Length: 308
Image 1 (tube, rainbow, N blue to C red):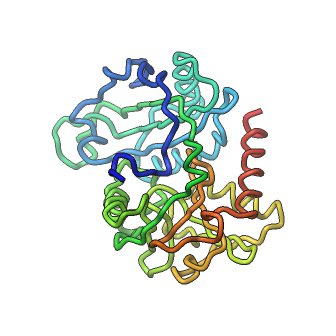
Image 2 (image 1 turned 45 degrees about the vertical axis):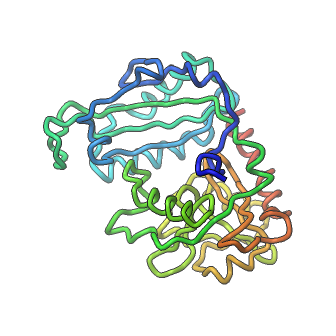
Image 3 (image 1 turned 135 degrees about the vertical axis):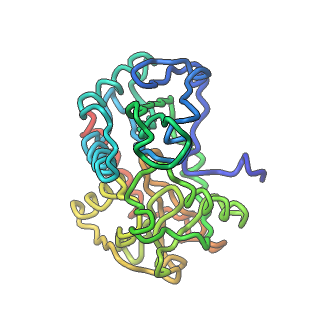
């Protein structure tokens, strides 16, 4: 299988409408092939920015408040002034969706950077013209084949680091750590990387949060070294509501290899089964099982309730 054909957790059904989308760039709607930012932009030069991935269902953004909590908290922590409040963000999203005729099965990547620098160097004070805000929306439905086949993970040497180096809770443009992990997994013949924390416990993948099911119990990492995922939080909430035992805990590859089920969580794919870890098959059904299926069904219900 060529690298281009290898599945990822963000595989989507091809939609020709995406060739002519309009992209929001600092208040203007620009055709896709003309949507650009300056080479002096902080995001391009340094990865100095934050982003959110969101899904549009029934004309409404799923879990909008949770996404805005994460975005504004992250920007505040790095002294990045977005230049608008939540309503301003929502107005920009609404304008972009309407211009593209989008109401359902839509994925959005909202990006805010510290803006254009006067010189191509690191210091934040060199960004003097205000933030750059870009919104890319695509007609995007997860590929059905992914849920059937499942994802193959390879444990990689690249780890999610300590908060004092780069806190994983920042959904930042600085993704090289995860890109390196993804490359290591690809070179090992897998689809994505399973990353450990600095102490060697199972943490997350390069793109999504990671869960296993053992004897009816749902386990995920402590959360100390992983992205504070909105979908991750919703899955934990569903388990508690449904009476499914759920634990945020340290566990090792020994536990993961012997799991009955395993799955990833993320805004785009919701819950994606993990079929293999380091070549070892998970469970008897490609990582799927009754617990994951129950969680996935309740998650779909939760999205419908939130976007009704």
